[in-house]
Image 1: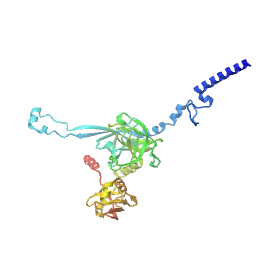
Image 2: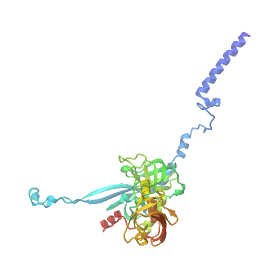
Image 3: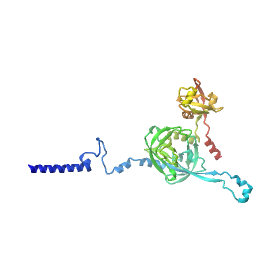
Image 4: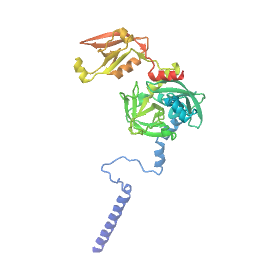
Length: 392
């Protein structure tokens, strides 16, 4: 009996030792997962896990969008101010009659653009091609082509250029209705001139305004790395469809700090189509200068809240002046659109068609009045005028 008990004890000890080794080194053999506090559903371990990870990555999205993103190289001649000493007889006596300055220097710039149609239209930022004397586009297949400006809109920082060729790989436009905060996005462009580059991030926020970048602002914010040279490039979703045009970064050093801004595809498409059709963007205008209503201003004017836009000035002879709008009025609504602040006022009025009449609801003193205003056409910005004068 003693011998049988000894054999049983030894067998039990060996079995426990084997079980301990199995549980420690191969817990799945024992039907247990290592370090799990609760039971979890886990994917099975497979030898081709790396290939599957690649298949569910963003390779296909990048492959779809990359051919439609181009590099834009610009050059311009900057006139130098002639030194008045060159006209001084004493100076010329010592340095000779042949001492002259060259009067100008060449400056170059770079950026990115997105092919929007197979017949050569390319969408980019206005600041990429601003004042450029020559524009060269480098395609993804290595070709380099001369481009011309079709039209631009400095107030939204968008421009359309065109190359004389066809059958180009055009981007697929997405829909802003399908874009939400947290969506994965890819930023494609030519940062610092190193070549075509793809960076990944998420949509950090939508509808960013009051940044002081453009007159009309409605940005997508993303943490995908956007650096100098990315301007005008594509912001695409996980399917490789265009959702924005990379435009600006927030940075104290010139490099990406994880706060980048892109013009949403809905705005970019609307402006692009107007530029291609008319050469310019036609917007509504009434000729007022508006100011945000702070809590202090609301108290001093006796206003019930801070909603609306305070009319600080009215252009003489403008549609607003002719309709009877006066400084000190508070604009509350245009048609069915409530006005929260001056930016909202600017966007609503700009969307109106010149020549149409709209109802403006205003607070004047203690009463609320409604005036009919005939919408005018917004004049070109100072940047646009400057560009036209230089072209002339």
